Length: 414
Image (cartoon, rainbow, N blue to C red; front, side, top):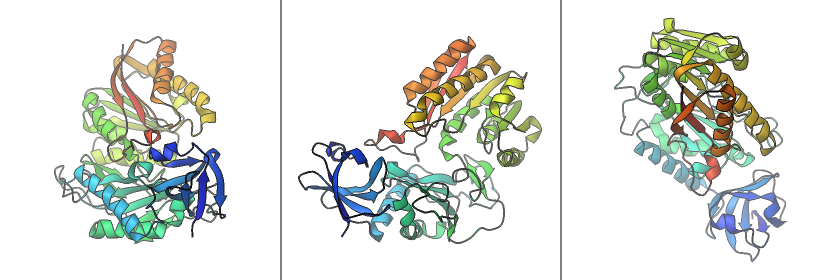
C-alpha cells in the first residue's frame, strides 16, 4: 500500500486545477515513510483522493502522475498509454518516421535527398507537457535518449524502456539512458549513463533537421546531445541570413551556424567556450560543404565580443540558463543585460539580433526588460520583430505554465 500524503485545508485547489506539483508547505501529514521516488497517494484534508505521484524530499514534494479518485500506481499500461499519446501527437506534427514525412533516414546513415531527409530528431516526452513530470525522451533517428530528472522517473526506467519498445517498435534500435547528470545525486549516487537497449554503432551519429544533416554526440554531449528546442527558431533565422555576416554565440554544435550557411550567409563565426562543442560545430559546418565561409572559436563569448573588431549583420545570443533557482534570478537578469549590451555594440546598423533566455525562473517580461536596459545602455534604437518560444514537440500544459521555459526576441537594430 503506497504511503498517503494529506494536504492542509485549502491547499488542494492547485491539484483540483490539475497543476502537477505538490509543495512541501502544503502537506499536513504523511501516513507511512515513503522513500524518494516512491509512488504516494495524495488526498485532501477531508480524505478525498486527489491523485498519485512520485514523492521526493524538498520543495516540490510530489510530482503528480494521475489525478482523481481512480488514479492508481502506474503499471505497464500506464507507461505505454502515456508514451503512445505523446508519439501520436508527434505523428500529427509530421515529426516521426511514420508521420507525413515518412522517408527520413535513421541515425548513422547519410542523407539521400532533401525531400527524403526532412527531420528525424524530435522530443518525444517533454516532462509535465506530456503528463510525465521529471522525464525527458529525445529521439535521434532510431535511438531514444532518456533523461530522468527525478528519482521516481529514474526508478521507472525499465518500465519506460519497455513502453518505448512497445510504442516505437521497429523504429527503435537502441535506448540510451543519460540520467547520471540529471537525477538527484542523493537518490542515485551510483547512477551511470549507458544503454538500456541495444548499443552504440561505433560510427558517427548523423541526424537530420529540416533537411540539414548534423553530427550528434548523445553519449558525451550536453543535454541529450542536441538543442532540439531551437528547430523552429533556426528555420526563422535562415530567412534573415542571405548576404549577411553572422555571429553565433554559445553555438554548442552549430545549429544556427549551419542554417545561416545553407541560407546564403557570406560569413559565419561560431563561438563557444567548449572545445568539444567547437569540434562538432566544425564537423557540422563541413557537412554543408560551405566551411570556407565559416570560422569557429573556442573562446569565452564575452571576451570574444570585447576583443573583436568585426561588425556583424546578424547575431545570435543563445546562452545556457543563467539562473536555475529564484535566488539567482537577479544576477541572471544582470547577465542578460550585459550580454545583450555587448551584442548590440557588435551589430551593424540595420542588423538583426536573435536573443534568448532558457532560464525558467526568468519570465518573458523580465527578460524583455533586461534587453530593454541593454538597448538603453548601448544607445541603440531597437524594434521587436518576433517573440519566440519552444517548438510544438516541447508542449506546455495549460495547467503548468512553468513549462514554457524558452523565451526569445528577434530585434531590428538601427
